[in-house]
Length: 119
Image (spheres, rainbow, N blue to C red):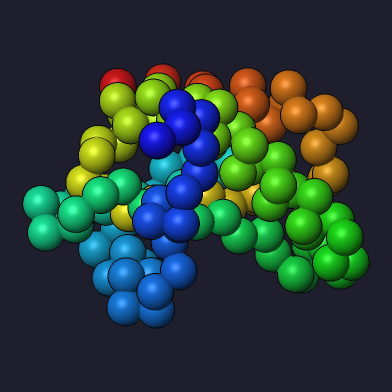
């Protein structure tokens, strides 16, 4: 298994899991990133999804760019995320700002601060 991979079993896709997340999850935000997360022992492994509002970004190109940046921030800092939110958790990342991020470093900095603010 790759150290920095984002395998299929880590992706949050099932409607049942997403509805469970929104029913039981807790919200947290830092900078332009918001997250909803829930820990539960019945969850086999950590699953993460990303979403960007169509209201704020009309063009699919812009939404896809931000989603790629969020996934990359998760992929490169998976160990920090796992330490913060646990291995048996469901999480979904959202881009809360109406502004397009300038650089990947801005997204990664907000992501790391979000993970560190939980502790």
